[in-house]
Structure formats: C-alpha cells, structure tokens
Length: 441
Image 1 (cartoon, one colour):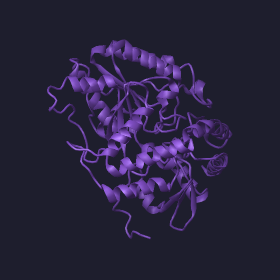
Image 2 (cartoon, helix red, strand yellow):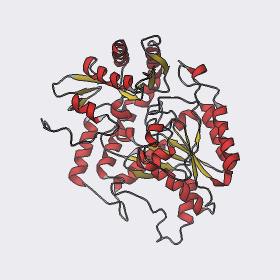
Image 3 (cartoon, rainbow, N blue to C red):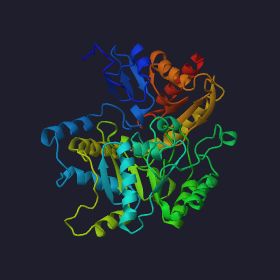
Image 4 (cartoon, rainbow, N blue to C red):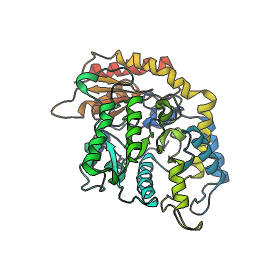
C-alpha cells in the first residue's frame, strides 16, 4: 500500500488543510456501503462519497467496463472526431430527460456543466437576435460548482467573497424558498412556496426582461444546506420564465440519477426545463463526467443560425469531453440503475430516511432537520464564536468514533446514502449521527 511520507504537497479543496495534516482521515478502499481506512476499519458511507456514488462502491460491472475501454480506446478526441460510446451514452441520457430535450453536451464535472450552461444560454440569445439578454439569475444558497461562473451564479457567500469581481450579469439571486420561523422540521418538501418564485417578477421590474437570459436553480439546495422546494414552486418559475422568454436551467448535479427517486427531478416535478446539468451520479463517481442536456429549440437555433454546415456552431469544449473511459463507466452505471431498480428503491426509502432523521429532533445542538428526496440536512446550532466549528467537529467525531463518513456544509450535516442503502443502513447512519451529537460541545 502506498504510504506518503509528506502530506503537505496536496492542497485539499474545501478543507482546513492545517487541521487535516494534524489528524488525517485517509480512505484506501471502498466496497458497497463502506469505505476502509489504512488499518482495515470499515467506515459507513453516509454521503455516497460526495453525493456521487449512487450505486455504491466497488461495482465490478463499472470497473470492468472502464478496464475494457482502457485497453480498447484509452482516448479519442471529440474536437472534429468522436467515438461510438459518446453517442450511445448521449442517447441513453436524453431518453431519461423530459420530451423535447434530445441533445447532450459532455463536460467533466458539475462545475464545467454550469459554465457550459451559462455560455450556451447567452450564446442562444445571440443566435436568435436577442443579444441584450445576458443576465443569469441564481438563488440564495445555490451551488453550481467552484469555477468563476459557478460561484458567480451560486449564492453561497464564502464561495464568492474572496475572489473579487465575478461575471457581469450574475449578481442577482432569488430568495431561498425557506422561512426558519415556519418551516423548521418540515418533513419532505415544504409547500406554499410560490411567493419565492414570484420574486423573479421584481428582478424583471428592476432590470427589464430584455436583459435576462436564464434562471438557474437546484431542485434542492445540496451544499447550501439541503433545502427542498416544491412542485408548485418550480411550476411557477417555469410559468414566469415562459411569460418573459427566459430559459430555465435545472442544476441536477446532485439530484440527477436517482436521488429524488427518478432519473431527474424534472420528472418528479412535472416541469420541463430548457437545460438540465448533470454529473456525479452519471458514473456513480467512478470516473469524472458531467454534461448539459439541451432543449431542442436551443440546439436547433445553433444549427440554423451559424452559417454554412462547415461552420462551428458552439466554440466551447474540453479535451476530455466524452472521454471513452468515462462513457464506459456511465453506460455500465445506467445499466445497474435500471437492472437493480435503484431509482424506485430510493423513492421507497425516502420515508424510511425521513422517519429516522426526524427522530433526532431534540438531540443536542439540533436546530432544524430537512429531508428532500433521499437526502437530509441536520442543521446544528452554530458556535457564535466559531461558525462552522461544530460541523467540522461532526466530521471528526463521525470518522474517529462512529466509523462513518459524513458531509457537512458549514454547520449542517448532509446525508445522502448510496441508493443501495437498506433500512438497516439508514438506522446505523442515524445511530452514528446521534452518537456524534452526544459528543459535540
């Protein structure tokens, strides 16, 4: 086993590196619902890796598909060339999307998907002669990756405030559809949220509809604290976008591929966006991949308004877009989801997780509990002298004392078990969280 003798060379993302170096948390193997550390200790995965390992760990069909691809076609350019798996995968993904969304643009992560969606939205309006539309409206506590485009559209303060001026036209954000006074400990999706969507009308009055290109929202806010929304909320957003001619972008990097009990949350809510961003679960975390599913009207505008057929329609892409190994991993992953009925299983497990996580109401330092889809957020009372400390302490306690890997955003513990989780697994997770809470101070 590789044992590094210096752990200062790797600058960990979104991590207090000095604290990590003082007490590392190393994961060396994974299988099913568990990670394993260098001593062989099993650590229950309560967050599907990083919201991504939806089919669980160590899935042999995925590993074998990657191996075959590495032997047969280790790389193929997709600038002016391509390979069959890219088309097979795009067809599979488009078939899962709402009707009228038949085209997929591949990237390598959710962050890159957000960037692509911004560029495609702006370029679309140039193509149809409405170039004055450049504003992209995000939402408070939204997370759309960590590129400059992603943090500009996102609404998490710490992700934005250190990096100076961002992207013009991305400063406006809709309010988070949440009111602490009335929504604490809501079970499932909160209701009566239409007024939060109606706030878009105020931005129209402020800027003029002719300057707004798109609205981008997550079906539930994941990294921002696991805040759910409702079907009527998204339907109201869709209606306002249609009224003024805006595009509606669903960032389904977390919610796509089963987290909401469907291929995409768009199906759950009966809403057809114009762009759906995806990543994470498309390969169950086994290989980096992301993308944007594009409505036909957008694709057709590029095809018909770019000059002759030899002209490039969209000047955008990445060296590793639709990488053969990632495509192989994704195709094998989609087979597992289908053959094992994991989306349907996740839908059934929502109630199990809901009942289990809400049993923590009244536990030490618990300020709120939220559970959209097969996910949950346990908001902790923040230490007024050190916001975020209790969240970091929860990670440490879970790892060292409860044999569990959890995810936190600030002082909110986020749970998103792999979709293979059983009732027993959920019970173990909640028992572990209860143990963590008992040790916080």
